[in-house]
Each structure stands twice: as C-alpha cells, then as structure tokens.
Image (cartoon, rainbow, N blue to C red):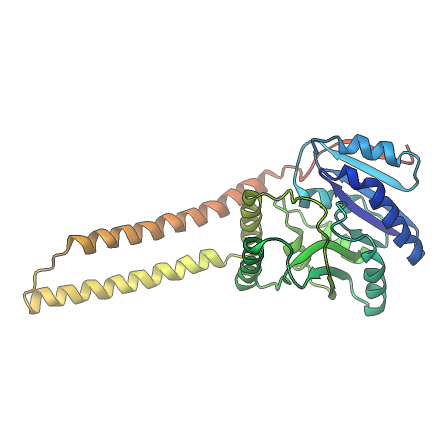
Length: 306
C-alpha cells in the first residue's frame, strides 16, 4: 500500500484536480492506497471543503490542525498517520505534478533505495529568489556535515523502513529538508520541474525564519566559528598591545589616537553582540525543545471509515 500525504493551505481550489491526477498515477502503478490531507489552520476553510469533496471517496483521511503550525509540521503530521509500505509527500497546489509518483515509484523499486526525492535544476522565481536560494544551499553545505542537495522540492517517496525511523525523531523545530538527509540510508534524486500555479505562501520573513531553523538544527559551526574568531582577536590584540608597549618604553613614543580607540571599541563590541545573538538563538531553540510541546494539535478528523 502507498500513503499519499499532502498539506492544505490556501489550496482548496486545486482539490478536485489534485485528486483526479493522483488517482490516475496510483492506478498506473497498481497499488492499494490511502490519501492523507492535513489542513494547516487555513483561513479559507480548507478542511470543510476537502471533507465535502472527499466524503464519497474511499481510503481518505483529512486532519484539521487547531492553528497554523507551518508547512513542515503539517507534513510530519500526515507522515505520523501514514501506514503504507511507501509514503509519498507532495504539495497539493499542483506546482508539483502528482504524476511524479510513477517515476518516483519505479525509481525506488529499481534502485533499491529508501528515499527518492525531487530537485530542480534551476529554481523558479525572480532573480533575488534564485540568488538567495543558491546562497542558502551553499551555506547549508558549508555549515553542515550532511550534504543537502540544491533546489529540493517537497515531493519525495519513502519506504516504511525510512518513515519508521523518521517518526522516532522528537525535534520540535522541524525542517524536513535537513532531517531527511540526516537519517542517512541510500537515497536518490530525480530532476523535476515545478509549475507556477500559485503565489507562494512563504513570505520573506518566513524564509528568514526557516533559514535560521535549518542552520541551528543542523550545525554548531556558528558557535565554533565565533570561538575561534574570539581566539584570533585575542591573540591579535595581545600582539598590538605588545607592539605599542615596546614603542612606548624603548622608542619613547606616546600612543595617541582617539579614532583608533573608537573603531576598536565598535569593532569588538559588534563582534561580542553578534556572538551573543548567535548564542541567544541556540538558547531559544533549547528553550522550545525542553518544553516538549506538541508539534501539532489536531482539532478535527475525517475518515471514510467514520
């Protein structure tokens, strides 16, 4: 059996077309199936619209979260309810083609891997989005021991062995791009091309928040960087102090220079504040994790078995 997991957030208009396309792909691969949709606190009543559409369909589960917990949390919610031998994650806005299921399925069967994921050769979007995306992935690779491929999409197909291990992870701060490539296992990427059907719901600040979540979740390199930077500045300062002391005692040169002092104070003060900021971000993540609040809360549940 294969579990289809998707999230609903301002995508209710695509529900009928998504259903027809995914059912066609399932019939082509000739597998039993279940469809799990998670409404992520959507303001447009996605849950009610999905229930009205799917109430006469079979093998359906629709979950409504009590508020907007975020795209990644909604996806993990769907995965936690998946019971299939394979689980296929996909966005329901039709930017990701449901027909990818067929190629992903054949690839995971033939290659004998535990994960098949989609990636784009070129990011869609304007110049700024493309540049920022390239910088993002380069930083992730630089700061992480795990190599995260460029331009990943949501769509991916996982074996039950893989999802069972995925469900054991207890992080409150979720990012499936980094977590999926933290688990290990044999995996393979397939080049895909997304369509441009809808306006992205990821605002600039959401992207910034996502970047910091990923950075803090996958790496301690920022802390190590500032530790070594502090050592470098300390030794450099000692060298400069030694030079001026030697100049004062042996060459009788009076050290003066208000500008130099002010610049030094501003430079070192900036480094200290930045360092404290990085430490503060890590502490805030620890604060969220130790409280062990639920990743998501389900307020309503619909199943064809009800």
